[in-house]
Image 1 (cartoon, one colour):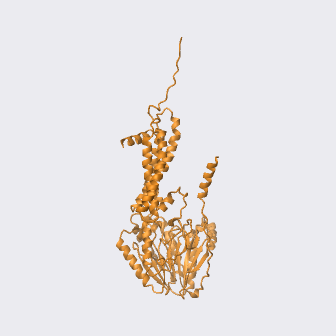
Image 2 (cartoon, rainbow over the protein chains, first blue to last red):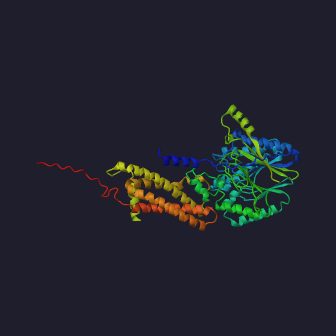
Image 3 (cartoon, rainbow over the protein chains, first blue to last red):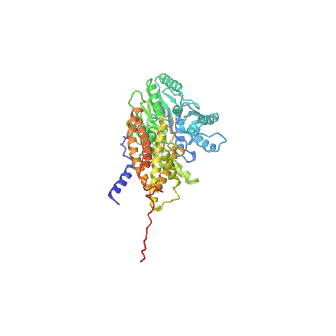
Length: 386
Length: 169
């Protein structure tokens, strides 16, 4: 083979390699003792492909929720935020449709995270809408959301504390105060990306400013499906050769609505920043990209920290961005622990590798895999936010 | 325009029933034309999608690219194959000019995009749209302006029979 061809092939292969990512310092503060904790908020995103019997993550999450619910004395001290894309690929089908059985099984698996004996008494789960819950923007997307809302309402009637927030087809913000130190604002950012109604958008921003301004001394977590910043594929981290440059060009030119650099998404982030001048949120929690990321922000119109927690049932590649404190391209979720004294700590619970997403096999093999993989999830990161 | 339509029609119609005398000589050009056409068509499809997004019709997902939006890929493959069979000479120039048009269009589009749209995406979008437009225009121009000596049915392309002369005393 001619040297020129050898060089060309080598170049092609090299260009497909992952670039080295800068090392991040290990951060691991201990979890505070339960006696000092006022509330715990779990951040779980993009769980819409997880089947309970085969998802070690959901099993681990349920055990974690149950554990904290049993250890914290007061009511509503544990909150689980499902950060959207709760049912892949097209949201919850209506009862009677062919896909309803599968879809409802997937959603039920998430509902069951707060359905344990202690969870039922002390935990709430709020489901936020993601783009896939809107039927991935097929016709009658808000109809799909209403089906999901009705499903959750039926579960609530059975005594499991779950709710779609904001209500189906509404942009938000919906808010909930947890204990005396925390306020959570919840948005349907998928609505925003589609919204033709400029006046409504302005009202959303004014309400945000109002809710932030009236939060007083409470720390504020802003929760939505779409993240504030991301170093994964929706944030533009796309390898050039992966789809022969096509995905790369689409990402660079802002052609995909769901990418952070599309014009509507950029407007969303800019609008959020404008409203954050009223009070700087402590944390912006999103999913959407299938990885775990913690990013520190320095600008006064940005949240102090933002996280991407979207690897509950899918995992994608991850890169680096300025301010990054933690990254993991593995299945996992995050949790925020707020102390009675008002301090806040953030933790990531992650599996050691991508392969821990699903357990295959049947009967004994499945049981053994689930037990083994569930045990493999560990707290891999912990830092004080305040 | 009439000439273009005629050229495309002939190229497509002659894709399989070869009338040329030297059919084996057209296999490689047909293959090359097909591959180049698919790649070029793919790029044109991409440009169209980027232009649509700039007009507010975004792709919701990468997978949406596959479907009717991929039509230029099929069209490009068919035209390229047909052109390779009809006239390797025209194909060669179309591909060369197509590359040139893509580069020039991309460069012009980059500048225009930077001026027309805010954010770093503007220049990328402009470059993608410009390159696609440049590719189409230059490909067609190249195919139309190339020499026609290898065209099927042209006088030059006709095989010259070997003439034996037998002299009798």
